[in-house]
Length: 43
Ligand SMILES: [Zn+2]
Image (cartoon, rainbow, N blue to C red; front, side, top):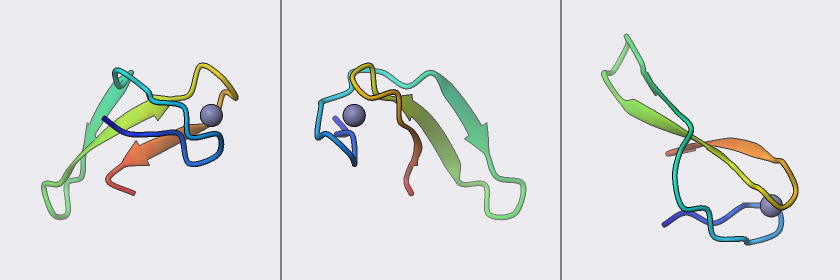
């Protein structure tokens, strides 16, 4: 499971997915409940 890059809180589930039309890579959007940072995996 991913960790927040800011506070290292473990985040259990992503909130959105996005598939890049260029390389078909699927990204998952995570939101930290602790500090409200948003980021995508893989970065
Ligand atoms: Zn955080």
